[in-house]
Image (tube, rainbow, N blue to C red; front, side):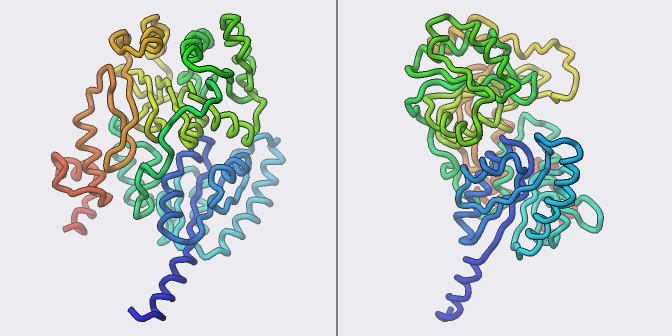
Length: 422
């Protein structure tokens, strides 16, 4: 290659522009990190990120290297008339600006109607994920494969790795978040998640928080939105006076900047499956998470090393939050068992009640996984084979390493893909 050709190639690499359409919620924004990191490390150009207006300042804090654009996607805090005006006027202005940029690649991560309309602004050949072609929704192959494996959610991969895999080459999973370690700022307690059945009642939170607080000095911070402020007061009322004196209810009192400041300083965070959990992992703060109902750690657990998930393991899990529970939320029962508190207090897993598995974060060639430290993991071997197939599909490992590649290929590939592969 001549010097002139090398200089031209360098310019083309530097000028590469990518757009990520991530207009979902708080947790989804943080879980886009492996994709953003991979693009920043490999492209040498600009990474643009489109988010909801309510998340713009947070996106700028956690992704300072990205160019952040925002639209009204959810209408949070707006009246019906304001939301309509904003979507028709302000959003259109943003869309026109994005369309004027010659993006080399567009990553459309969600499948909402608005996502598809935004994807339609760009040449479909450049769109990865959920595409709009000739008036029809046509997901790319990786997205289509995911729709097939969601029939068995216990084998699903972490969404950070799923979204990250749209970009090649993938950055190492170790490059996404720092290893977790205490930061010296006490204990954080997230009061509730967006889905009610995923959260613990106030009496459970107060009891478990007391155990964690006994292991760490410093303040105890109750975290949540304004909707959880009353729940925070309920938790405070249930605490012993010695713990209540060093606990502050910050629910509804922190903007994105303040929340990042508090979370990044903690020794540990106790939480259900929430956006704040992912924020703690982003900062390398140790997470102790409680997963039940529709929450399944292999899909949305905290990313990075040094985190622990207490996963409910009933036959009906993971369920759908929108579907009625016909088992009286049986998956909540182990968290109220006195032996669960004893397990946390002593660190001895022999006290773990039935219906729970303690999972600890780990990495393999595909990305984040979990290893059972105590309790059952009936799908461990099947999950290992499934992950080996996906790693092979993505070129992250040798195809011969999997146990039965043909079995998984028959389940996840379309017929035409077999033809092209041959």
